Length: 310
Image (cartoon, rainbow, N blue to C red; front, side, top):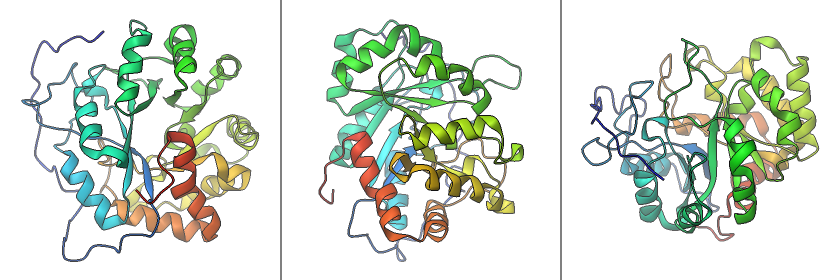
């Protein structure tokens, strides 16, 4: 099922902790309920966990310990660990991280059409609840290394995921995803869209693709991760994103998941802090029942976290 990497690519440690100034003496008080960040990544040394393919970006050194420390400061205690593209289909680091985290984490892996039902069931038993599919392309127009396309989901993997009660997570630009709606409507499994569905805020709220997406969220057909940092510029604020964020919440807050994309790889400006992003979310939403739903209850529903405090 999995190919071992042919070369051990150097992991760059420069600037590895530049996006979070951690002060262990000033943590945010732990909330009474288990807040979940539904999209984070873990990167270890290549000596311990080699990359499967040439990275399309400069991966940071951001081990599980850093994620946990960052979460403690932000008041976030649960995480959805998403397989980064440099590791391709090799789930070794993902599975090791899930084992360490126990009931505080669930995993989203990557697999191609060669995976068997038995192998998929094995990683499911280890805490993997879904597979990731990517439609984003490199600036050259080439497929991103380590990515598996939505076509593979539709043509090969959807039946396996359905049999095991797993779901699909998709990252791609909204116009591209819109092309897949007719086929995605028929695969019979839940679909979660990364990074606010890949909407281009410059296209405006009235953009037909965005209105189509809102309709699907309203009908309960699609889940969306509210990762504002991937739709806005932290140095210039996220004001341009708020109208889209508000539109999603007005459409159907039961289909939304809060996410940061920590540790903010390939971020064009100064990376945000997890604690700042959750503060922005709270200031935008205000309604405590909706905040609780998106931060706590929806991750329980979608990812299968326990209903206790965790």
